[in-house]
Image (cartoon, rainbow, N blue to C red; front, top):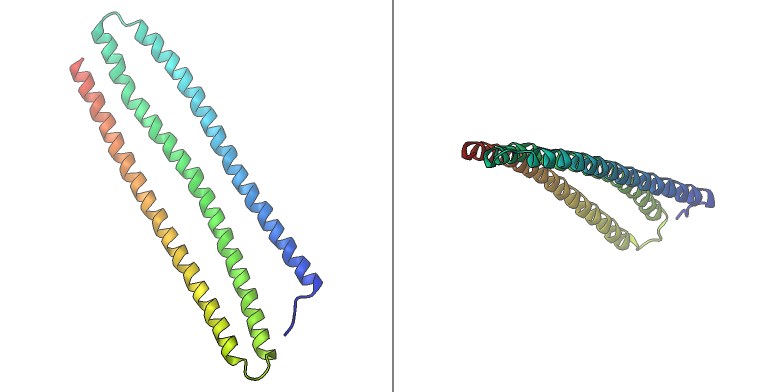
Length: 186
């Protein structure tokens, strides 16, 4: 059985650290994007709130007041939906990148373990075939479990995307209907 050389061990550790720092950088970039989105959303909300308050205070009668309120509902709902879509896009992109990196690392480790097992099997003493077969079976089971979890995660992501689309459409329709109803009442 061949054990890794110090150079191979050091190279493996270096690659692992590079991957860790790369993933940390991606996560940090995503956090920065979310923070920037939140700051811009807050700035816009404050400015729009101030403008809306000034318009509302300048209403001459109750009908004008309610008309302003009705006109504000749909744009506010649309902005909230746009914000949600932006957050989802950032999180989804980060999730995809992290998932791809995890998949790549898993496959790399899988190849390394398989190589180790093959090397051990070639150099194993007589009578150890059962132990080698059990070890190979355990590796195959672990690989199957990872693939099942990965498939379930992909399906969950697809369902979440579908649900977000449905909620967005329903909320947009509801906001439009509420605006029409409020305008008719005013």
